[in-house]
Image: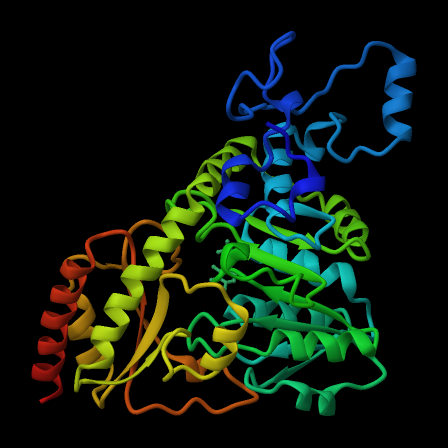
Length: 407
Ligand SMILES: *Cc1c(COP(=O)(O)O)cnc(C)c1O
């Protein structure tokens, strides 16, 4: 089995997921190429050399995917990185990070310098905003937030210092789908780099680089790992941008533990079947919620009630398991009555694991360019791999508690 780059455009996504990153030299004993199905966990800090000449040779040539020193990784991490690269046909390579936020921070630092201007989508993940407002600001990099529903009108915000546009589509609280091809085409004409947080769809449902983005970021913590037990991030970039991303990651000393990379590779093998099931179950629950009188709106990209639904239909090949709904009236306390009594939903941050989660979300707190307006409080659901009929029954009882508390 080879991770041969030449045929990656011909394989379908499920085939990629089964085969990617399994180079024979990483899965072999002498004389038995490719004998082991998965690259094992190679733990290393020190790498030993035959002699001084060997040591010198290693230091003077590229250390990418070559044993050099533990911080540059071992085949366990390279296999995962290669597999993620193979999921994006336009990609040159992928760097791995100890969390999604670390991946976002490194991607931004690799394209921005003091004096530059960044356009950031107003629906971005809150820690991404914090990085811009605290860290980038202190380095003299200015951020302007823009409405996720703007496409070419975004040009009003661009000036001679604008170096990068950051997208997140859909946003992970309110699920506006962005016009990625339009924004990235406009950016490219003006020599501006585009970065996208593609955590919701993953390359399984949306190949961000094929839709024009230069850099695609994943919180692998979510669907790639898929089992709520590892923190990990990735940055995948085009040939023009990858060397800069790699250099910045090396300079910052970023790397991942081989055990975590191995668990993420294990997760990746089932990403397709998991996402297909998350999709079906989430749609089942979302459509049921849309029919309930206590629900004002369901914010799920695959439903027409979601802003940007038409763009989702045009660009995405599927939808994952995370969406929100807006309650009809009610307040903090009646929303808590709904969530607190749920039997099958955990209450907690994160998502993308096999188990369902419910979270109260307050989008108005995380907006500056746009005003969040809604008929009532918002609940975000991660639909896991439980039977959706159980989840619907649980939510039905939750809505009854909500009505009672609302009065
Ligand atoms: C969770 C998340 C991140 C950050 O990932 P961590 O691994 O938790 O640092 C980034 N973007 C989105 C959309 C997320 O949901």
